[in-house]
Image (cartoon, rainbow, N blue to C red; front, side, top):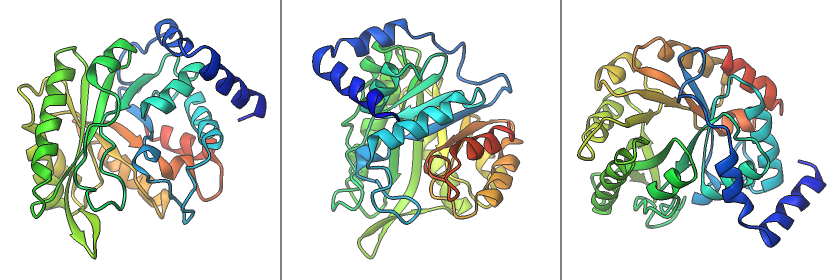
Length: 290
């Protein structure tokens, strides 16, 4: 991201904050949530708002906003990357940069479960809401829904997620629910990625809200994705997370994409911060799977 671009973003935010709304109103929207392949590939960058800045061994890898925007715009320049998932602040920057034209856009709704906090499992809705998603012309909202059977703060999160599903559905917008069965280990929240746990999370998340008509599920890769996909008829996207072996992970994603209700991928840090630094190459390697 050039210094003059960053300076212009800062100047616009200071002197003309209404430019963000104008950019949203003028933005050409995507014709649908999936690309020409019939699948979607959404780049995810909602981690910073939850205080999760680390990736690839660097605890502050995502802290430089100019660098992050540069990586995001590089990813979005690939026509096979047809969408983005981020918090309102990042989406506002991308709108001003013109990077969201023709893209499917998901706003990240709950970022209150700060990484490493004592209250982490309490995923309060502190981000963009359904009304703002509709007003900005975005396509849906995403909600992290971690389910810890040993923590009673899980119940309010489930209730809030159900309300968000209803609020989005009332406006014909996609509710992308990201469920995990989680637990505390050594004071840290850990997600259970076994097939049984992911299947259970699918069953719980599918029933949230008064309708599932607009609900999608954002799920981790489990050992038996066929069983996971069979647990619901809802559209599913497979998430990325921290990936140690990107080549092996691509093979796993490819197998998942063969399942009928797996409609795409939502990947973030492993593509935005690849080990070799080649964001465009990492994105293109995933686009080829679609």
